[in-house]
Amino acid sequence: MSGSIDDALQFFQHSCGHWRSQRSSHHLLHRRAEAGGSFIEVVELQAGDPLLIAIAQLHGQDPGALVGGCRVRWSGSMAWDKAGEAHEGESVFGLIPTDERGREGLLLRDRGYAETAPVAGHFAMDERNALVLTTDYETMSSLERFSFAGPDVRLRTSTVEGLSNTASFCVETRLAGPAGPSPVRTATTRSGPLSPLGW
Image (cartoon, rainbow, N blue to C red; front, top):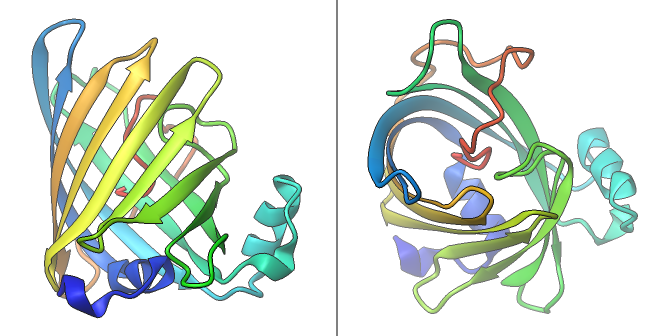
């Protein structure tokens, strides 16, 4: 599977569809682990999509440099949730390669992983064709690595360092079609780090 992915755009294209994610988060300060799960929908966006053009302009980047992106919606829960808390939302991602092969460059987001404000991070494909994302925020930084264990199984590891120090591992399984609750509401999204890219 990994050998068929040549660049970051192809990685995003392989990620399109519906996924069930099982997550284990380790809160280093509290020395405790927390389990959770979510349903994820990933939809490809073409380079000329108005959503991608808007996000490029938001970050002061040339929309013509975009090669594509995706819109991600998610709905999930974590073991420590209180009554009324929800992890629901959506985010838009745009890819701007900085090399000729499309294996590294800028990843534009309309909301971040560790913070919800718009943010631009960096992506790079490693020697095993995994996608590595690094993002620096005002108060913390995050490192995420995505890889395919097969056509329908994706693995994700992430660490956040700063005011909130966490390490997470996710196993994401592709679903045959739409399943689980429809993740379309955003008003009740909790600000904690459920990655918009899984996401």
